[in-house]
Length: 302
Image 1 (cartoon, one colour):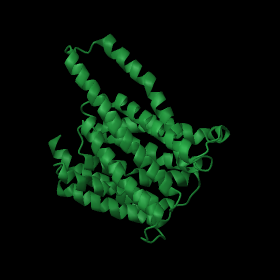
Image 2 (spheres, rainbow, N blue to C red):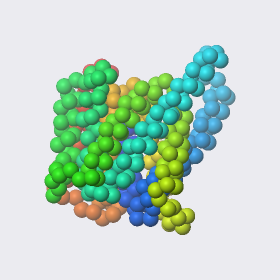
Image 3 (cartoon, rainbow, N blue to C red):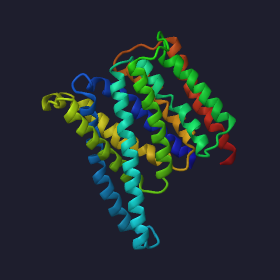
Image 4 (tube, helix red, strand yellow):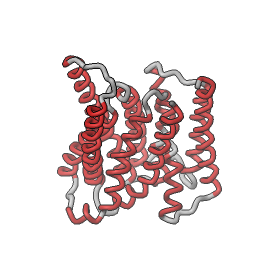
């Protein structure tokens, strides 16, 4: 049911929102490529026992599945590999553009620009024949207003080097959402997630060796934020994203996932003691209103 998918995506946004705290703290110890190389490798490794357990349970229970021919199995493996490589490459580019961009701009601007995927996704969806109703477009407009109120307090719209890098990140995350929308109904979501993390981790490690000087002591010093980002943000949240997006309109998915901006502000307030202004609280309320509005068109059909 779609409401269950929505709850999974909301949980994903919650984990990602809290991950902004871990991401901020982790950057005090290590570079962006080192951070992403380690956390994505951990995220992929965490999913390996999950995959084996799921396969074992499936074989034990049988589940009354039809026998799969060798040709069908080969095609499924090919689709999984192509999907994992595609999603992994896009994810590698998006996360590292974001991580580097944050170094040259404010967190507020980075949060606003990154979340612009809620507009980019439906625009790209037009070319992929992913039609959206007027209520969804209204929700997109509300979400943009909410994000502005939430993230842009005291900041102008001047485009810096960091802003441009994060804008590229927003486009890449939009492509990632659309790639997940295409591959998730066709392959095992957990296996797809596992492959994409290892691809991102390997590529990040290559760039880490050429552009940074990782120190093992610094990595161990950042163990807490790395573990949260690796196990929860990567291993759990991105897998929930793949599962939750099955059968959902990608624009609606992006709207729910954009709640990470609101949750990140709340996490900063609760964990780091950062205060919320009235304007930011209003932004959170508008964002939640946008999500409710986006859900309305589906209700009469259930």
